[in-house]
Image (cartoon, rainbow, N blue to C red; front, side, top):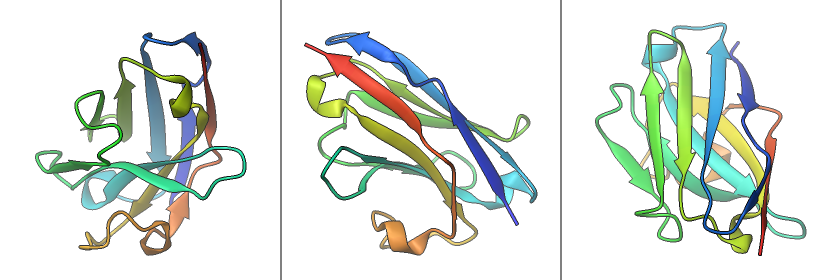
Amino acid sequence: QVQLVESGGQLVQAGGSLRLSCAASGRTFSNYVMAWFRQAPGKEREFVAVTTWSGINTYYADSVKDRFTISRDNAKNTVYLRLNSLKPDDTAVYYCATDSSFSDSYYLASVYNYWGQGTQVTVSS
């Protein structure tokens, strides 16, 4: 069993920055693929970014590429999401997710077995 706890979400003005954190416990963190998803009111949960075990390979949704950065610190069992140049459209609950296998369908929420409770990011215009 893996437990994930997100933090760092808050209200921020457009153009601002945030860093979200996701602390993992329960299994060997370094063996797990870590991803971020988000869900805005009335919309489906959507993929944001993913990092493989080493942190060397990362993939992003087109909507956040060049603005968001995913990273991980295996010594701290934590994955981060740096959000820059925030837009009102980035407003959502951000979720951390993990699984032991990396899938070519990494952008689908259904491939991840473990989820955190989410952290709210609100971007004002």
